[in-house]
Length: 397
Ligand code: PMP
Ligand code: GLU
Figure 1 (cartoon, helix red, strand yellow):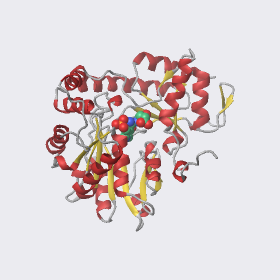
Figure 2 (cartoon, rainbow, N blue to C red; figure 1 turned 45 degrees about the vertical axis):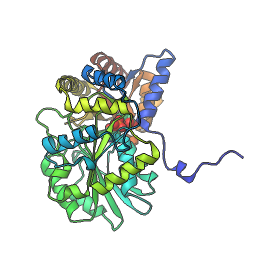
Figure 3 (tube, helix red, strand yellow; figure 1 turned 180 degrees about the vertical axis):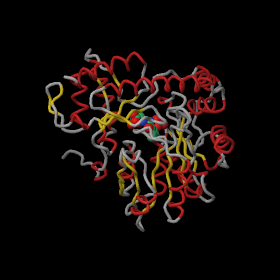
C-alpha cells in the first residue's frame, strides 16, 4: 500500500506565484526566451553593507543555533524601529523573528486560529493567506472588493461578515497583488469597526517602505488605543532590502502570542538562520541609502508600466500606490481568441501569454480575483520594455 497522506494534504495547493515562476524558469531552461514578471522579488542584489555584515557574522563564529525567537540584537532592533519610527511602543519580547514573513504569518495563524474559527480575508488577497488559514483548521471567509471601490474593504462589509466564530481580519496595505494603499482615515474607520467586535487583526505590512508619490503607509496597530493588544503586525527584510533568499521576517504581537510563536519555532525550526539574522540587523540599523535608490528605481518602472498599460488594447489598471505590482484588468479579452487559443478566464489568459508571447504573469484567480493578471515590475527596464512589446503584439493578434 502506498503511504496515505493526511487529510490536511487536500487543504492546500502550491503557491501559484512560485508555480508560475517555476514554469517560467523551466521554459528558460529549455532555451525559450521568457520575459518574466511572475515573481514579486526585487531584482537588485542585497546591498553590499548587508552582505559584508553576513560575512563578518560567519567569520566571527555566529554560525550556531540562536534563541528560537531570534537573536536579542535583532529583536531589539525591530522593537526600536517600531517604537521610534512607527510610533508603536514595542518591547523586544513582542518581536519574533522567523524564516521570512510567510513563516511569521503561518506561526501567527497557528497561535490564534483553529478548527471552528473564521478568518476574514478581503480579496484580492496575497496567494498564501487562504491556504495558510486552512492549514490551521480555520475557515477563510473571503470578502470580495471591487476595482470600482479601489479594492478596499469597507467597515460595513467587515461588520456584516463578523460572526461569533470570527477570530481575525487579515489586512495588507500596501497590497499584493493590487498595490492598493488604504488611507489613514480608511484604516481608522476599519479600526473603529474592529473595536466594536472581539475580532483580532493580522496586518501584513511587508511593503510599508515601498510607496510612491505622497502615498503614506500606516501601521495599523497604532491607530487607536487598545488596538495593539489585538493586532499582529507582520513585516520583514525581503522586499525593502532585496533579501528574499535570506528568509528573515518578523511579527510584533502581544507578548502571550509572541511567547507561543517562539515556542512553536523551538519545536519546528529551532531558529532562523543565524547569519541572516545578523545581516538583518545591519539592514535595519545600518545606512538606508540603498533603500532610497531601489525605491527610486521602482518608482521609475511604475511610471513606465502605467504608461505602457495605457497603450495596451482593452487593458486597464488602478495605479498602484505601493508595492511593485500592476494588477491589470484583462477581462475584456475573455471570449476572444489570442495566439490561436480561446481565452476564457485569467488562467487561460496567463497560460496563453506565457506559451505564445513568452510573457509570464500570474492569474488573478490565484489572488481570489477573476478577470485580472498580475505583473511584477520588480524586474529591469529592458525586460519590461520587451515584455510590453510582446504583450502588445499578443493582444493585437
Ligand atoms: N506578505 C506578502 C503580502 C507578500 O507579498 C510576501 C511575498 N514574499 C510575503 C508576505 C512573504 O515574504 P517573505 O519572502 O519574507 O516570506
Ligand atoms: N510574495 C511574492 C509574490 O507574491 C513571492 C512569492 C511567494 O512567496 O509566494 O510573488
